[in-house]
Amino acid sequence: MAGKTNCDLCGHYAYDAEEECYFCDLNLDEDDMMRFLTGSNDSCHYFQLYDEYAVVRKQI
Image (cartoon, rainbow, N blue to C red; front, side, top):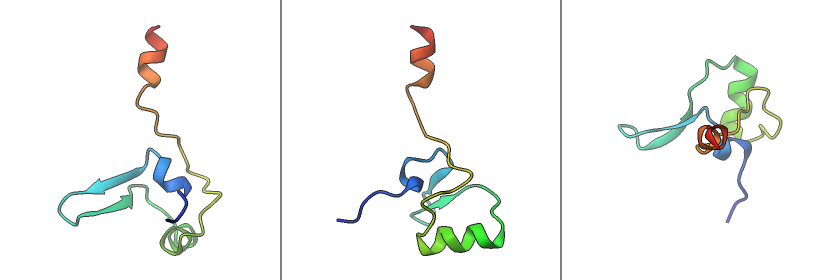
């Protein structure tokens, strides 16, 4: 089993039900898109941790 990349945990990584695949919903430049497509984006500048419980922690 392959290890998770930053994309798997990123808030910009979305699922497209029509295409049945995941994609990055940012407008990436050519270099960033090549890193995304080849899976060599271990240090993505746009990474934002998807934390669905962030709002709940603020309320406590």
